Image 1 (cartoon, one colour):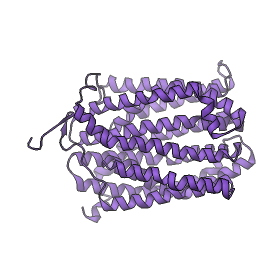
Image 2 (cartoon, rainbow, N blue to C red):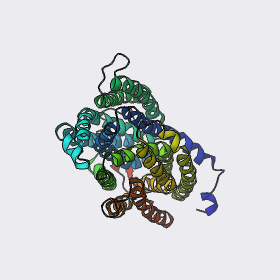
Image 3 (cartoon, one colour):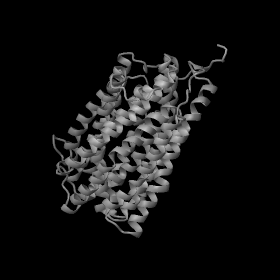
Image 4 (cartoon, rainbow, N blue to C red):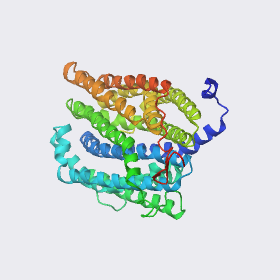
Length: 466
């Protein structure tokens, strides 16, 4: 593929698909980040302890959500490539496999949330007030895990077939409902009881349930591609299951180990006390709002790459990959400036002390300065490598970066140098730089591209002579 093709701004199909697929995903992730911010702003009225408690309690949900994302983003590479060759039958079987795995995964997380909530909290922090409130939050939010498992399967698999709007519509309704219920249940407004932290968890549980109902109603009501019956999601052969598991397993392991690794940062922040964990929670939520754009770009890039690989257009897939990374760098620079400029405005919504606000502002500058690097990594890992079937390499750079660079830097900053939270975050960000270097090398090598469905059809292996 010629270099001019990589920088072709007249490729209307690419940009049309980029917005058609990516915009709803971006909005959906923006809504999710907005929901977290609303939770934190409203919880902030209860004090720093409540913000820290909810932030730490959500680490279990964070690991679970990333596990779901790992299963379904891995499955999505099959859906995208099958959709590229027009095989709806196989797409529905992929959905069936991912649903089963996600629901099974929800069981241990639910049990931990019900029987070991204090132990989860104690791992990150020793403050008894934070532990007690976090345990209350965990016991309620744990009931949403099975609901999230089903929603994630349908929403993320929908991206593989280019059907991203149903999930966006459902998320919009969930955000609106969650906001109203938060207002009522945290502070006892609208005729509802004042439940504090428990009210926030209850609001999220109800909103997640309604979101799932709306999502399934849209998909099955309109008989979209994923409106599969139980039999259509079950008729896969053993060989197809084996072919599915081989490239998807590294993605699942990748997300679990990455989530645990990133959660270890909270362990070190917790050594610095409630102020540090509160700062980290606020800045991560604020950063998520600005970073939502790149989830859309990564998803649309991945779907287009998978579709082109499935259709046998591998040169075009390589051009799309390079073009998406270049766009990510440009957008990352712009959004980094926006985050730095908008930080004081967003921090004004949080009712915390001046010391925390100062630390948050400086930490926001750290995230702003590394935004374009984070964009490269998301597009390469989630968009390019996974949808190109290069899941082992993606797992290696995504897991080894935090465990070999980020966590040692966090330990150095907290335990040896005893730096303030924003400087520790700057040290931790070095893992993103290392990951980006290896990611770009892999992109230029072209070794990330693998056709996973060339000899598969409807869940069965097709002989080479066929």
